Amino acid sequence: MSIKDIVKKLQKIENQLPYNTFVSDGNNNRINTSFYFDKDSKSGYLEVIFGDLCIGPPGFAHGGAIASVFDEAMGATAWLNAHKVMTAKLEINYLKPVPLNTKILGEFSIENIQRRNVKIGGRLVSEDEGTLFAAANGIFVVVNAKKFENKLNQDASFNKFKEFLENHK
Image (cartoon, one colour):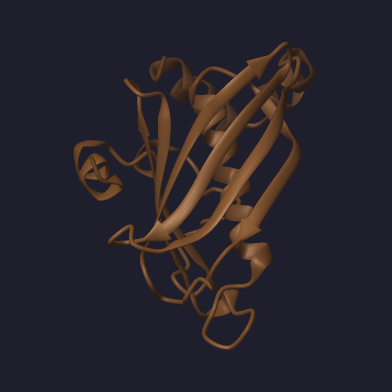
């Protein structure tokens, strides 16, 4: 089944979050993302448009903008699979330039878990899935949630995020 068909069946995660994400703040001139999670396959899916403020080479997205989308989507895939992680390593193969103001699709899944290391793979493709723009692998390290507890308890949006995660088990 195509990413486009899978996404049609899923509910957008951002509609349920109490805040904007690091990557997507609703500014269509920057990075506009819609993230989806499939509980059955435990995979994350993404629709993303890199706006004019993401310009690298003329007409194309900056590599750093692409990297931030991979980092956030792969991390979200881990968190929604109940792995509280931080990025340890992110490796991206940039295969084709990503055009600005064009819908791009992404797919992300956990490939392996060894002790505290969660290995996640992902890819960004054209809307028809005929062009592979970039592929990434990352190692995300499970952290002790207690280290964040004081910060989490002080921040109302993170408390809502905690509730959100509990509801998506």
